[in-house]
Image (cartoon, rainbow, N blue to C red):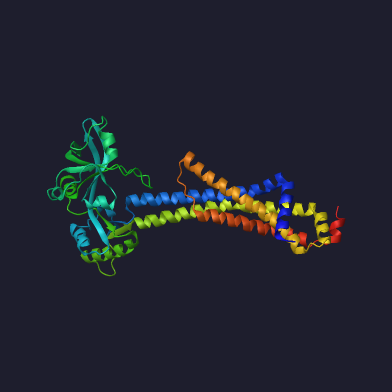
Length: 406
């Protein structure tokens, strides 16, 4: 018996039991749709996190003082003064894998304009800091090198500062605000960036020349941190090793001594977040995959019922010349048709559900081609796997006993 005849017989059998066939497909439909939707949500979240980290500077390297132990007491890292301006200059002059570098000092306090005030932080940096952190100026201009040399009282402000101080819609550029009683002239407004992956407002900040914050606000000569940017994200590790060697040499640390500084990179954060997202995506996909397993068991159950109901038909076909492999192929085709049709409907439903999640809930989703192909292949294999045993049972029936079956 050729394949076309077997296909016609299988379609006729399914057409005679439409509702039963649809209910059997339902398990496959729900399983495939669930897998596609869950993977789309997981991949969308991963891409969203990557985009937000890229906005923060995906190749950014942060250097902070390390905690020290003196007299058996471990001191807080924030109290250490191990980073100097010489360290920053050495990194700028000697590194091969660093594209930008900025010293950094900061202070928290109230910023005031007229009758409005707001608690925030001011960061003392140089122009390179904007490139490292992917900030751009929306209005005005960045403070100049001359402002850094003269410790000028000028600053850039984020949108959050503008919204809380200039409540009457005043133009902030050219206005003077006060931070801890020290006047600062606003020379520029930063382009809004919103909240990052950790829920921190990236627009709640004031940027000023680091020399101004050192001398006029904090009265210190050391640096609280140094921010660098590797040439590329892939070269971040090499840049970290290079910076470590320079700082250890500058601080005259012995080979056995621990670093008196800490180096962290956005790549570490990106790797951790991606790992967590991948784990959650796989967990969601596995949970959704259970539906496919249930759908496969449903196919096996229905095929068993079909074999039982059509025992006499099987006997008649075998008595007029149909071979065991023809009967096996007939029932396998029925199982595959159920699973493939269910798979197609499941793909359509899954893509529609992912789209609805994006539109209604507002979650980021991204449907990858591999998830659609994988779900479709799995449901086809499921149909073959769970349809094989009932089909094998049908092909092994004795024709005489099958004809006698009531």
